[in-house]
Length: 211
Image (cartoon, rainbow, N blue to C red; front, side, top):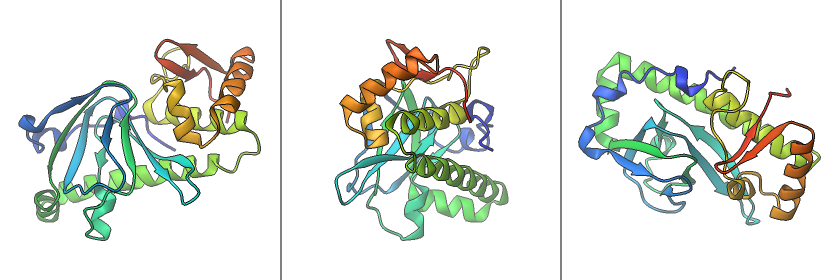
């Protein structure tokens, strides 16, 4: 089960990542582009981030989601490569802090609380990635779109009425699902008529978890 990011404890990272590195991003703004060299670990102080990957056929899919308290860039440490394999984009107004990857790893190796927090974050991201991957097995565009929106809702939480706390800009759904926009637009119309999603100025929100 994914614990919503608004339940995440910002400690121990809030006292570790320098405030001087704080950078704000607008909704839809890229944080990291695939294929670019990155030697920093990012910590999400506020907001929501989606990571997408484009396969050899040119189809893009969401591979992870990060909210307050999450780390971005940890997967690079397994290979030692500074080449970021995914595209990270802000879904909402987002604030990140960062530090050099080598410095971060050195601190994590020396402090048990940091090592434990890193493992917790990796386990959580693995579960989100699994759910997003499972959504690609859907037999219809409507189901695929709905499954992705449900993972967003599970990751970032819901309001008192059960509506997703984070809206996904409609244009981002094409990149997150790999489905053509015309099919997505038709699917959103059907889902809205069925009362399953809510379309607003900020984007699309799932109204209730179906599965």
